Length: 297
Image (tube, rainbow, N blue to C red; front, side, top):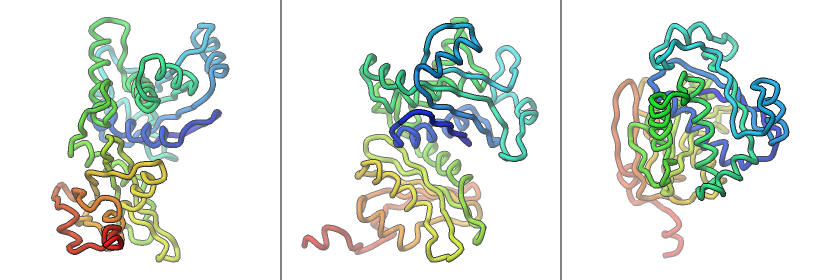
């Protein structure tokens, strides 16, 4: 999913990475196969207070506001509304515009403390809650509320942010997140788009895509993009990496195998291409690998 960020207030960049993964997972869990986009504004309580008063007649700050562009029939959500989504196609974005979200960053932090869970979980929940509204879910009636809550938990569980924040992420979800990351590839020279989703031991997922350069030698692979993002946000332990391409198996290149070996010599590598899936431990892809332990010895 394309998230069009408008950030008016300071926020931990790690939350943005998590929110991107949650947004991608929302489309996957809903069964939407078309590219979609959402405008996301992150602001303070004063700004969301004004919007809430002007658009909803509610004179107070709140945590999240959603403004969908699609008018779904009763009981229908985005996964069953392909024709309606097509009507919201944006030629400039090459995606269907689902609508706008406004999130209060102070509310994210305050509610995380109030409910006794992490800011990561609260940020992911509020984004997912808003996106569910944009996909046609609601919680006014009790049956609708149960249906919406079930979808929210399904999405949060898939990105390791369920209520207990200890849920495991399936290979299917990780592969779907790698495929979503591939859509953001910058590969005008090779035409070979690759996406990666790196699973941390603590349940976080970092996505990456290949980013090419006119000098060719400065091109960065999807695996290293994901790894460097994760390291820069304090993650150092990893269990699995999923890598997605289209026409051939995207096994990591030698440079990526070496970078993975630096932090996760026992990591599991899953690749998908043209409907195929294969996997291997890194030790099999990089036998007799040289790493930090080699220097210590």
